[in-house]
Every structure is written in structure tokens, then in C-alpha cells.
Image 1 (cartoon, helix red, strand yellow):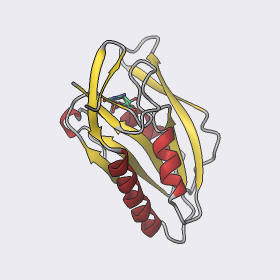
Image 2: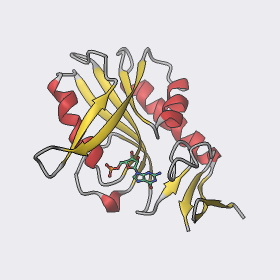
Image 3: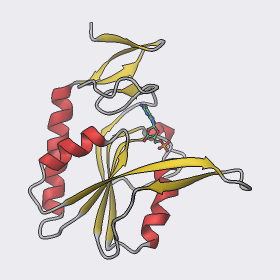
Length: 177
Ligand code: 5GP
């Protein structure tokens, strides 16, 4: 029951759509309180966060802006490490209250590489809202200001998250069996 197969792997329901809905509402309420009188800019990271961002945004009662960006990593020509580039950040974030919206923070590498680029543009404040967090997988410590669910270090799909392109449309979050 509640089992599905995506590509070669079996997944079972881990977080119900009802629990997600409730938690997203709670995060929105916290943000409504914290940003009262401000006009934050939400920067949602594609692709995985589109569903969380949409649901979170519809529960906001404060004035707020939303934009989506994509982060691409590639091997630097000389360096051995990965470089994170942004695709689509057209907004000027100078002096703005910015909230990053992520689907999941795993090792923290993606955001760790991206945050300095945003801070360089001197926003007034910068916070992170992530639906999921895998604390055990942390390799690059980050301050996460709003966390939906802390989960074990197991692969999950659904509610925007994919396994090789599939599974984003699932209403629940599923964990690999
Ligand atoms: P990090 O840079 O924090 O290690 O990883 C962040 C990105 O890895 C997420 O935005 C997501 O795209 C991907 N990711 C990490 N863990 C999972 C997972 O359990 N399921 C899926 N579908 N993607 C994941």
C-alpha cells in the first residue's frame, strides 16, 4: 500500500499531502509575522521548488515578490571544484529582504556555493526556507531559517522532487524503499 515504482526503484509514502499542506501553511504564517511591513523577494530555485514555492506563496498575506532561478553546476576549466552559475536572476536585490526557497537541502553544497553571489549584491537580509532538510548529510553548514521537515539521509521524490525526471507530480513525498 502506498507503494510506487519509478524507473528501477520502489518508493513508499513518507509524508502525506495533508501533512505537507499543514506544514507549508505554518511556514507561511511564520514568514507573514517575520516580514510584516516588509516586501520580501522570494527567490525559488528550479526545478524542484516550484510546487513548494507556489503553495507557500499562496498563503502569504504580506506584500511579496517571487522569482525563479536555476542553478547550474559545471566543472571549472582549471579548478577541480564545481562552479555554480545562476540562470535568470534578473532582479536587483540590493537593499532587499531576500528569502531563498529550496525543495531540499542535502549536503548544502548548492546553496553554499550560491549564497556568496547573492550576498555580494548586498541584500538587506537573506534567509533560507527549505521544505526538506537532511541533517545527517550536511557537509557545508548553512543557516536554515525555515525548515519544513528534517528527514533521514534517504532519497525522496514527489511534491516537485524528481527521480531522473519522473515523480514531480506526486502529491505526497515518497521515500526510496
Ligand atoms: P545539496 O547541494 O544540498 O547537496 O543538494 C541539493 C539538491 O540536490 C536539491 O535541490 C535536489 O535537487 C537534490 N537532492 C538532494 N537530495 C535529494 C533527494 O532525496 N531527492 C531528490 N529528488 N533530489 C535531491
